[in-house]
Image (cartoon, rainbow, N blue to C red; front, side, top):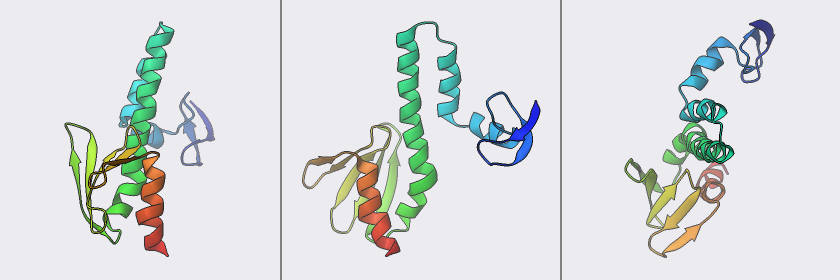
Length: 136
């Protein structure tokens, strides 16, 4: 290991070959997307590698929503409850005005049940509809 700038926390520390310090490297190992990315790097077949990298993108979308937006969404006005359905990997969001919404974070899709209307990209719509209006 060498002492360099960590690409994640931007501190000068001992850096691993991936460009992360020991603290960030341990946090990254806990993420499923990082584990799948390491599995993909060992694949010999190009199609198998492509499939693994597609899984990585889906997991990164899921992690991004949970880390950055879930808590903000829970405290937004107009949101009654948010429940996670583990079997279908979706969030069921109850709102005051739109009724029940099904948000699939890995696919970045949202279903408004009352209107039977799909919205994609859903995260952008959720942020502009619920989170940004809260901050105004």
